[in-house]
Structures are given as structure tokens and as C-alpha cells.
Length: 118
Image (cartoon, rainbow, N blue to C red; front, side, top):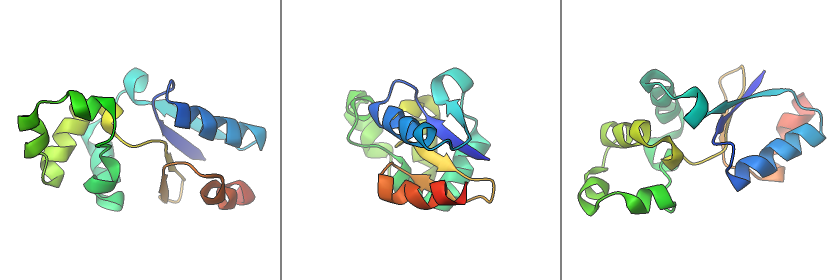
């Protein structure tokens, strides 16, 4: 079973979901805003992908933070706290498979092997 993590109104999430659904790939969607995000799950993501990869520093949520807060995000613990408070700051989509593998972001080329396994 696949789980896609993100925020439902994100354009990239919409593209990824449309791609999977058009190919009849069964997955569960976890909306950070509606379903929440706990520290243990976020730590699992950080451990596998790295906090730098997960933290979206290009988005509006990041830009709305104070300069002091942005400057303080220089390690995994600080990044985890900011992402827990602002889950929209996590790059998306994050697709996780039952075997523990994770894929961050969306491209048809990256998703193709997942479709073939399903």
C-alpha cells in the first residue's frame, strides 16, 4: 500500500494524485492539515531523506517566517520543530511504500516504476 503525504490543495499533489488515479494505483492520501503530523513520523522522514531535502525554503510559508526563525533552522532538530509547526513547509508530495521506501516530489519518470510494481 502506498501513502501520499501532502496538502490537498497543492498543485503538485493534484498532478501526482491524478497520475496515480489514471493508472489505477491504489494509495492512501494523508493531508498534513486535516490528518495532522506527529513528531515520530516526521523524524522517520528526516532520518531517511534528510531535513534539507524535506524543508521547502522556496514557498510562501518559509518566506513568512521571521528572519530570526529562518536563521535558526540550521540543523535537523530546529528544522523538525519548524516543520511540525508549519507542515505546509514540507516539500511535497512525499510518497511512501509499505516496504519503507520514500519518494519526494513528483515526476512521471520517478513515479513510473511505482506504477509498474502496482
